[in-house]
Image 1 (cartoon, rainbow, N blue to C red):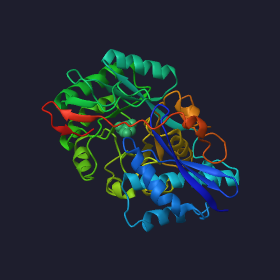
Image 2: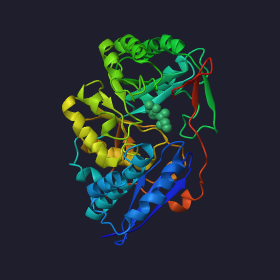
Image 3: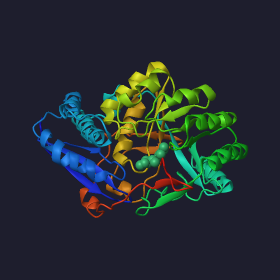
Image 4: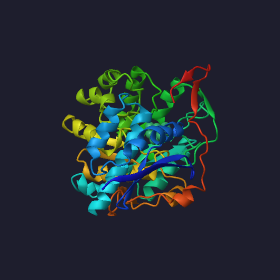
Amino acid sequence: MKISNARVIVTSPGRNFVTLKIETDAGVHGIGDATLNGRELAVASYLTEHVVPLLEGRDPADIEDTWQYLYKGAYWRRGPVTMAAIAAVDMALWDIKGKVLDTPVYNLLGGRSRRGVLCYVHASGRSIADTIEQVRRLREEGYRAIRVQCVAPGIDNMYGTPRGMDGQQPDLPFVEEGWATEKYLRFVPELFAAVRDAVGFDVHLLHDAHHRLTPIEAGWLGKRLEDYQLFWLEDAVPAELQESFRLIRQHTTTPLAVGEVFNSLYDCHQLIREQLIDYIRASVVHAGGITQLRKVAHFAEPYHVKTGCHGAADLSPVTMAAALHFGLATHNVGIQEYAHHAEETPEVFPHAWSFSDGYLHPGEAPGLGVDIDEKLAARYPYDRAYLPVSRKVDGTASSW
Ligand code: KDG
Ligand code: MG
């Protein structure tokens, strides 16, 4: 079997998604997600101009070799654009292999390790009362793990709070101003005290600090959150400097998660080897596909580090499908983020994966069990959008 054709489809059903479709001379096709929020067209062009011409004529069965060929052959390694492009090819090839062998991809990755993949959803409130209300509602809907974010008094627009959280991309471009670490730090322990008081301990709670703290601030926060028994504190600090997590670890036993912006094992090997984190958040789409993510997970397993893959609404249902096949099969998977897409997104990307009673399941369709309706996709043209920009009260640019 040979790859006969590959093409990139950019569509915006609720928000922008970049999808690679690979076709074969046997009539079987596969799809992969290449979405890089706010920089979508860079990956689309990397694929169209530089990767697609290399695919034609290759045997789609040779997944590992194609991965190495694209990674090593380019000379310019890693980085979000390159790795999202490689991820899309990788996902599409796993999809094809599953379809050709008439089996779901999880079966090719070793079979089931669990009945379903524990997932967490988002409660994002404007006030503590509003946040508690959301947590209660999500519990009633069957979710067992909930990320809790709430606007801190005195900070108008804050990461993870209502704006842009409904699967639709936020308006173009909005600047998020007025970040004040001291207000946030004072508020978060109060928030978790109130939420635990209201809903008890029979639900996993998570929190995302979104790279906004220094290591010592993160240590301070983690220590104060210990009594509320968080599942994890995410992205406490930016992780470009991996050893900064040593300082946090010295000060708190709150479990730590990081890595949604990582592109490969090289971004997290120290964090894992030194057991500085508990969960690695690398995703199928931004960390080089199933092929690279499996290596990250296998490397992490002996160090007691589990995966908790990024699954924000800007990762397409194709990535979710791949993450769930990986998640069902891989032993040290901890949890999967599940941010709901806009209503029109699953119409463009019909999929077999589903949610039930707190768990996600990839379904039993051969391959990844997800497709793209190209005709419908064409009705939602690309819609230029950027992530918000965070500034401190004095106007200094800050991490988002
Ligand atoms: O594109 C960036 C978003 O995916 C990211 O900000 C979401 O932090 C995020 C999360 O944990 O879902
Ligand atoms: Mg995050």
